Image (cartoon, rainbow, N blue to C red):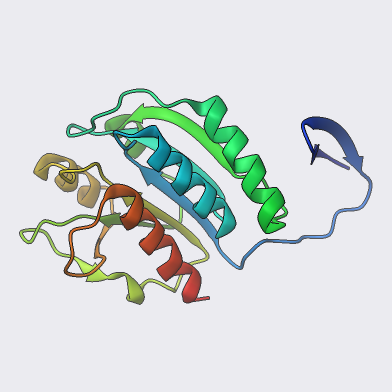
Length: 186
């Protein structure tokens, strides 16, 4: 037996499922870790698009160069619900409040962790080479990128540096580009 939530209009009702058939929005478990953007509307736009693409969860991370220490999670939750309805997705992704980067790195779990950064003094691979895992977490830093120390810590923990091309992208654009690139590899 499995319990869950049924979301309909503005109401949430509990349901009990007697038989469970494994259904997934995609073949991958795709997670996003990103620094909050300065403008909350840009984060709302990203959450909407990420949900449409089938993201499993979004974690917000506080980096040294972050400009926003708090996120309006209630508003992002409403945006995510509207996006799953519109895109007819099966699952509401997990939305996780801001946590310091060091704490989140300490909690690393399995799968492939891809760290998008712009530093030439650390190795980066094209994102296109990372289709070997069904469990992918993409890390996107703040405007101004991750610091050298943050990249060092991340790579010491086994994260793989990736490049999203030659252009320097805004945080939400980089996140969406990375999510779309991984989705296209399925």
